[in-house]
Image (tube, rainbow, N blue to C red; front, top):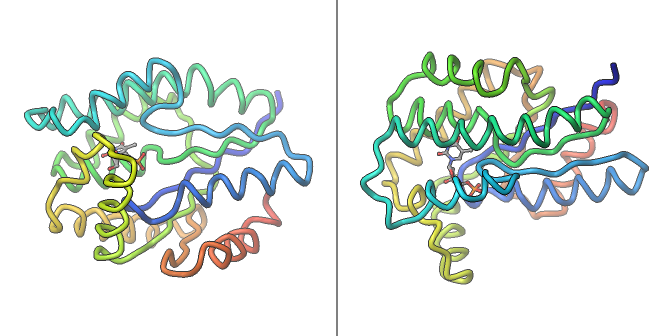
Amino acid sequence: MKRGLFITFEGIDGCGKTTQLRLLGQRLRSIGRDVEETVEPGGTAIGRLIRKILLDGANSQMDARAELLLYFASRAQNVAEVIRPAMDAGRVVLCDRFTDSTLVYQGCGRGLGAELVVQLDQIACDGLRPDITVLIDIDLQTSLARAQQRNATLQSTETRIDDESAAFHGAVRDAYRALAAGEPERFVVLDGAMKIGNVARHLWEALRERV
Ligand code: TMP
């Protein structure tokens, strides 16, 4: 059976990962690659309904374990409906966030622990792991400023996680950096303070041999 390539994009809010995912998608298509772009939470019709519940600022009473399970419910649907079939067809799958997000936000930020996240990952993703993970690292101040600007411009109600404290987002950033340091062969770490074009250039240099 053919096997595609699974590339995930990670980073704290406002790091620019979605922009970089789209630019990489365009570049890969321009050289003839067959690309599937998806997002977590979301990526399917069912996932988009789950995303609405997860990110609605009005749901401030959500229990941390309920939150954890909803992220994995969205992911299970995305793996079954979009990612696994695309991989089996030999396509390049670009996914905006995946289980590393759950490790750092719920495992670390919410204090639920990595073990629980890994167990649920086995159920939801059935052994599917990213081949390459792009981590775009930015400082907290830039992250908060960009997230606030985006929410104001889009009049977004997707504010529940953004509304967490600076300490929460700081712990998440540290957890991302620790994950990347522990798996240097999977992670490509880029400095999100660079201009968009420069981040894209560095990313392409890091990936061109592997895609
Ligand atoms: P986004 O704005 O990058 O689409 O991400 C949505 C928010 O959901 C973001 O604040 C990070 C959060 N999140 C988690 O807390 N756990 C997860 O597993 C995922 C995928 C996202």
